[in-house]
Length: 508
Image: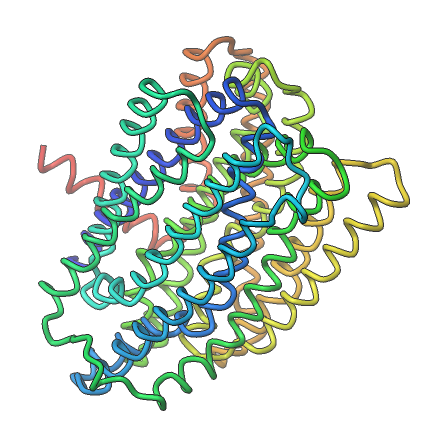
């Protein structure tokens, strides 16, 4: 029961943080596009993409740090836990410093590599520099986050993320009101928000896991070798992910136009909400999965995996079906000065991948639990390579233009989500190859049914204006919940949800 309450609290706190993230994007996107132009907004998103390229390197060290720290902590072997903590921290400092130095050199001459309008060069350079500084502190913060997983207090992360987003909104209002608009202000705000989250992680680390210490004496080359030896494949996976979805803005900048880069950036803003939602829904289950796997409780592990798939599948279905039916109206109200019809089609094609990827996403944690990641990483790398090649081929030899950027990514993501990963995930847990297909298939069907029902309701209501949009979206969410509750959730999951609702009603 305590685990259930903690799970609900975590989902609520991280859910609120995701909503706040959407609020920030909701106001920032039209503001920058109207004040500075679509091209400027494209560079905001591109700067964040460049950071994702740097993360490929640090992933080799960090991807398994929390896993090993948590396992040794639960086993009460604090000496080994401290070896991993200290080794990961000092390793991160070295890696982040090297990347920051290389990044500064790139920024100095970046106009030689990217197409940038002359009036934006200085502002874009400052933006990239500040984003690199933010990356440095974000990287060295990673090891402190292990305490949140060890104590199953991811709700605290959500709480401080909400505070950070509130501060972010206030800072944007104040800075853009007091000073002439510049795109590099975004970098300043990012650093302030990171400072808040960094402070929260250090506080949690010191107060809740006092047994863990960062000391030079605890640095262990063997621990580094073990972390990197296992994590190097996650770096390969990150490279594949980058090739599959992280190079679209760069390719657009180099092969198409800066205006089209900005349009892809706006599309990625909506897609990033889907990605954030997936991560938000998966995180609360990870401490439970880690504990069940450590205890070798296979039955409980499977039930928790199944529930995480259904919950992630429900929210991916609601968001996809909702945007499919209301997205055109949303763009017309949100950024009326843009080509809303083009943006709507680009976004639908982009988020179509989440119909299959959404339910599968929680299962990727299996690779971390079992430390079996070579094959899926190679698959991701091959898929990413095919994606980039596909972009170049379609742009060069067809008239598809900007559509080439989103179509290839969606096709590759869908194939890897449905065909290649589920069988190997089952294999890693020593289960039958088709173990996860029934629950994944019912989620994909549920998404299709929900989209059909939502579309019929939306056509009947025909909403206009923000009030009509919000009211219709709220009603659709309720309808979507009942669709999933009846047709997708298992008997045990329905009982679980019903018991939670009964307790909430009785408490009132």
